[in-house]
Structure formats: C-alpha cells, structure tokens
Length: 102
Image (tube, rainbow, N blue to C red; front, side, top):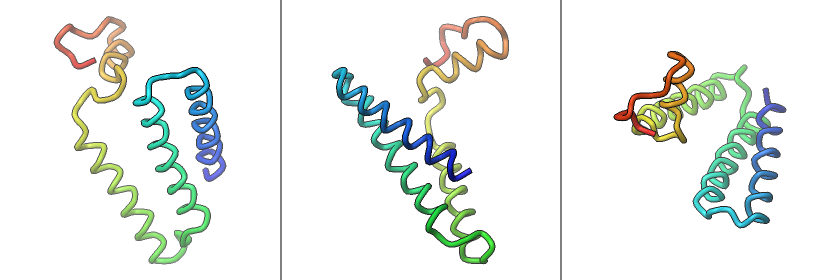
C-alpha cells in the first residue's frame, strides 16, 4: 500500500512538471501541488510514523481517516470535475439531467 501511494506521488509530480512546461492554468497546478503535499504527508506518516501495531499509531491512523472523511463530507456535491455527471452516466447509461451540478 505504501508503494502505491509513493508511485501516485511520483505520477502527480510528473504531471505537474508537464503542466508547467505546457503553461497550463495555475489553478490546475495549484490543485496538483495541494495533492502532492497531502500525499507526501500521508506517505511520510505511513512510512516513518508509528505502526498500527501500537495503540498510539492506531489512534493516529484512525484519526487521519476520520478527518479525511469529514472533509470529504463537507465538500459541496459535484465539486469534483464532473463527478456527479460521470456517476449518473455510468449508473443509468444516459447523460445527467441539466439541473445537476457539473
């Protein structure tokens, strides 16, 4: 699992390099930089942090997972890039209705 997130971190950094070289909008680069910071913190926590075999390490891992869930639940629906429309299309096989967030 650690290697998966480490590889994802490498992938996002390479995407950022390509975005900078191709003069992509700064908000995209900023979003990917925020993702890199979060992934780097998570990889550091999992790799160097306390083990889940100890009570303290288990508490940190559970608190981190709960914090991420609360943050995700507080996001407005459809804040992802077309997530709602893609989910609707995948489930129903049709385009999302016009009043759905995009």
